[in-house]
Amino acid sequence: MRTKEDVIAELKQVYYPGFSRDIVSFGLVQKVDVNEEYINVQLLVKSQDSSIGDKIKTETEEHLQSKFSDSKIEVSVDQQAPPQFNTSSEQTKPNFLPTVKHSIAVASGKGGVGKSTVTVNLAVALAKQGLKVGLLDADIYGPSIPTMFGIKEQPYFDGKKLHPIEKNGVHLMSIGFLVDNKDAVVWRGALVHRALQQLMNDVSWPELDIMLFDMPPGTGDAQLTLSQSVTLDGSIIVSTPQDVALIDAVKGVKMFEKVNVDTIGIIENMSYFLCPHCGQRTDIFSHGGVAETCKSMNVSVLGEIPIDADIRKGGDEGIPVIIAKPESPQSKAFIRVARNVIEHINK
Ligand SMILES: Nc1ncnc2c1ncn2[C@@H]1O[C@H](COP(=O)(O)OP(=O)(O)OP(=O)(O)O)[C@@H](O)[C@H]1O
Ligand SMILES: [Mg+2]
Image 1 (tube, rainbow, N blue to C red):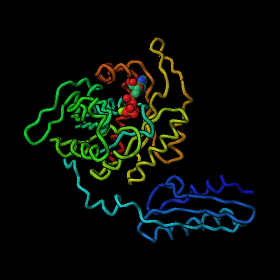
Image 2 (cartoon, rainbow, N blue to C red):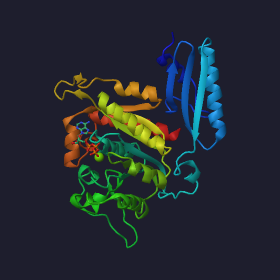
Image 3 (cartoon, rainbow, N blue to C red):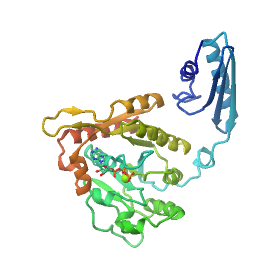
Image 4 (cartoon, helix red, strand yellow):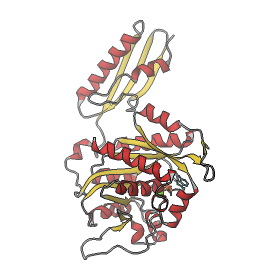
């Protein structure tokens, strides 16, 4: 007898109309019931176009019938209008960063996995590849960029706008340049939203090929603000290899899906340990989980970054490892990620 897993495997062969992604990875499948006689599948489609739901229903029914010809196939589709902030408001939403060609949010589903560390080194790696790069610290509560870049001065204010601070080839802006960390934590909801928009709007950003956003951990408020303020090319999710962090990585991907932002890929941080004495590699956590998760969600693995004392030291001392030790295997790992990102935005 066929199992629920058999049916889900077949549902992965049904694509969302007009996309190269299947209905399972898109999160459309709500329920699958299987017994000896019938297969019952419930789908949830969020689209204003009613023909999409009908199309998916027909295609799913036909595909399942062709694979399980002796079962009665029942596919029901619950179609709902998408939330207000996506497609329909897309045309009217302001673009707060008109001088920026590509915008990418670096996020995770869980705190402390190394988003800021990865973003800092990736930004410098992209600049080393010849791109004009900006980095906006979207973490209003706990900005890390001033420390990780070793910046103590305040940005220049010309009477109208703030000027980003340029360091290591990257144009930087952070709330941490303007207020003490201890003051930043008392900010609340709407103020955080406004502060983040001001870091885009009230800053004289130069012409940039790419802007990275170092996202805060947690709830998705910043994701919502960003998706309302700029057209993002996509998100990059940072995850560690443990199962528990991977579940959070999936959460991170889904958080962006809710605001209609695709995930470009996942970076596995603290992926393996390179012995500083003999160079031998040890997979401290089980390795390869990110690749598997990426495959099931149809997103790319953008790279693997080792867990390493120099990477941590670079963050604490304000000299990113890619500047301090540009020829090290750690730095090369960041360059590989940068090349993958460039390949993606040039597509
Ligand atoms: N590859 C790595 N090797 C060694 N240490 C690392 C690595 N990546 C991050 N760290 C260390 O882990 C700690 C957390 O990193 P980081 O602040 O970048 O995480 P985060 O995801 O931005 O955290 P938050 O969710 O609080 O914003 C820091 O001390 C950092 O130096
Ligand atoms: Mg951070």
